[in-house]
Amino acid sequence: MSDNAAAGTVEAQGPVEIDDELARHLENKREELLEKFGIHDEFPDAVLDEAAERTDDIAGDIETELDVREDLRELTTWTTDPVDARDFDDALSIEQRDDEYVLWVHIADVTHYVDPDSEMWAEAVRRANTVYLPDYTIHMLPAELAETVCSLVPDEDRLAHTVEMHLDRETLSYETIDIYKSVIRSDERLTYTQAEERLDDPDSDLHEENSLVFELADRMHEQRKADGSLVLNPRRDRAHTIIEECMLKANKAVTHELMWNRGVEAMYRVHPQPSPEQWDEALQEIQELDGVSIPGEAWGDDPRIAVNATLEDAPERQLGKIQFAVMKVMPRARYMNDPFGGHHALNFDIYGHFTSPIRRLSDLVNHWIVHENDVPEDLLALCDHASDQQQAAEKCEREYKQFLEEVGLDADAVNNRGIEVVDDE
Image (tube, rainbow, N blue to C red):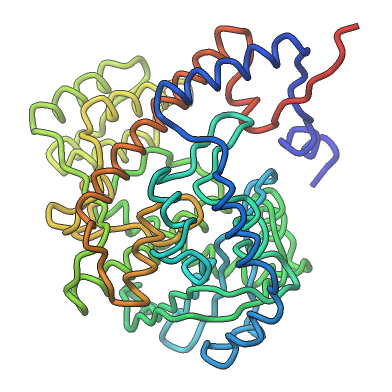
């Protein structure tokens, strides 16, 4: 990467600078919003004490677990995350064989440390998700857990829940799905920018692996679009495409296993479809935008395919308005204890979350169900609570971003680069 190009990256721009007075205003606003939406910031002492106790002997615990887990430490494995990420909860491995791809998605094994009888589980249920405000995060689980044993850092053994998928080279369909507990050892932690650089440099470490997984991810992405999956961000870079598509494939594999092979209840993600009239309203609004035209052949197809086709050629300045027109008519997705109704935006008959158990209750519960085949008695109440808490978190984030704009701060810049308080003398 050239010096000029590097200067334009988030890493090179540095934090947004504010003075003490504005910092106090931001803190007061956060406290006001957290109280308004019932979001808890500080962890009870019992939860923190339990987290410390359960992470007391990491090496010894992992050594013991090697007797009952798949040892994948020799498998080339790496993580890809934003530059400011503090926990790395998912990692990838990939191989290409004669007639198949083998894709491993390794997820931090949170349920090894957090079970339904623990204080941390009870607190995770109360919070239901991590809340991400620009430059301020309210975690679902204690940072001591999320940033240590459940962070798949390089060159250290870690406990994982692995989804191993054998995919047909031609159709990309699942030939086999295997979900099991493992021990992994990440070779490297990449930022999204570094992953892009590795893709461009044939002589770099992990170039072949990143190139192969992008080849697969790009094909999965195009296949999803062709099948009618709504893609509102068609110009995402290669590194983000890799992570998004691999996580979608793993989530879909897990819920396929839960529903079709086991027939059990779980925390499925159900997204209803808009009415035909609502879709017509959105498409008409999009068609009237300056410089935007829905391709003639797309009008009679699935409206999701029409939106995808429009976004491909729309001017950059209109992307946000197209996305907003669609989101206005979209019903809210909710967690349900059965998958029926499917996920409209993704065009998946069955879908659920598995790949982020550090930050979402749904994933934590699904990890427990997959491993123990034990469905919590209060599963329906958990689904409703997680759905409600997610909505509260989104409202809190939206109002905080509005406040940042009101006080003259760029919410996206704060979110991407963080804040530094400086003397105003």
